[in-house]
Length: 149
Image (cartoon, rainbow, N blue to C red; front, side):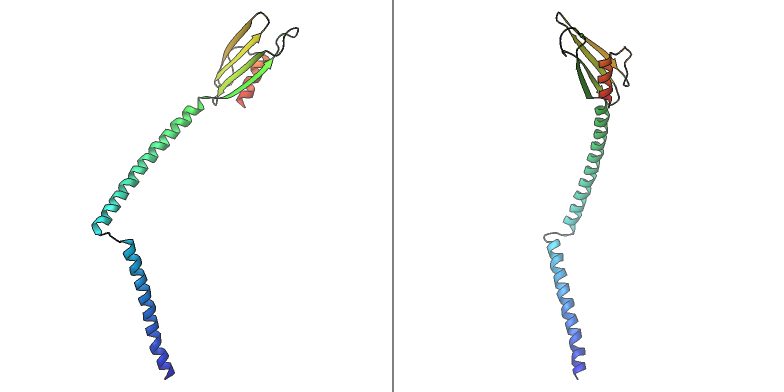
């Protein structure tokens, strides 16, 4: 008799558990679709699809723009080196200088200024691929080499 009672209660307990789970799932379903009908869900999907497509186009535009900026950045002057020196051992101090301005491709200019009591001379020499077609002084060669590192 006790076995019959247990066998009779088990289906009732299982039915109550299943009923509880169904009610809980129904609440979640209603909360998810609260105020929505089939038309508004289709509209929502259409709008989301359009937005995703617009985002993909914007991403392509941004990637293209970033590649353009990278290419332009390689041509900008980003490497600079300076050396001060005294070209005349018998007079003055380290008032003369050599300075180089070089981009990532090794192109740029090296400028030097020679200072003496009665005048200042300024020279500029182009740099292409890390070298100059003009003879460089020791100080100019040093700053070009340092800026290429």
